[in-house]
Image 1 (tube, rainbow, N blue to C red):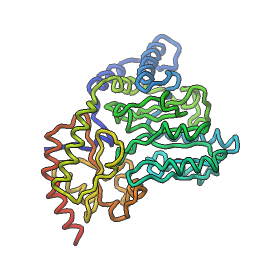
Image 2: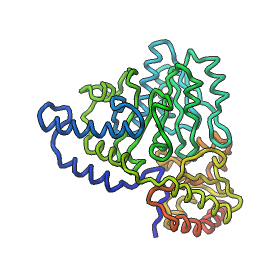
Image 3: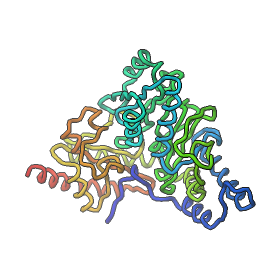
Image 4: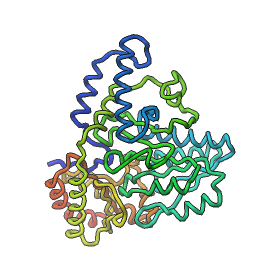
Length: 380
């Protein structure tokens, strides 16, 4: 038996997205070409743009297609910083629990572009400290080029109060990485009030290698890629029509049963607490996404547990897939108050549209033996 509980890393493509993508792969035409083949591809692509816009509640002209969520994050953070720096603002504000697709560009801006970077701390439940943010803005708001706070954390699933961040920020541009949130919890670009928002197709049953930056139509930022001037001259390059079509098809499909996945998550948490009473569910006191459960198992080592779970036929994670193979404590759990030891004693289980009650119960059945063996290995 093989159980996949790593949907936060990537999800299976839904049939409607796969079929749409395959159909478009058979079509000929560069969407930037002016002949009939190019115009036909452009029409299909713009229809897809309208679908994405409808699903995230923005204007079609605000959708900028990218090759990934990481690229979208880089465009947003660097572009908004450069725009702010031109006005004498060099402070970048991010949370302490951001994905590396924000942490690393922020560090690059620090080391190469003269930025100062301040990380907003979080509570033990993983929610950003709004008091800290407000005091920072009160004292240094005139220096801040951009604020980037993720909509929901990829390791714990904890949802952040982005609308309140925007309210506190006032006229300061706010970007949010909503890669994990899209289609899993209410998400409205216009209601949140952010300047920019990041999406990724493969987190919602779409293809790998396609994402989007939602950027307010009145905002102009310097581009990372220069060339043909596609996507408002912010992201040049021939548009990947098949993947965009697959992205839109996945976004429009109602394949993610929120209530059922929430029930699975809660069933799993209750089961873990029953069979392993000393386990700690991280972020349990906060509002969370339906499918993510991050659990600390005292006196174990995450990498050992991951291998033991894999040997038992269960695919889960120690945290972000982008950091897999890096033997260091989760910066997210450290920010929430864990020690280096306890932060490296945790696993992330993430449920998705294909997850079942049987999957949940099977994992609970093998977990006690895995933890026993993991503790034995850790004591050697």
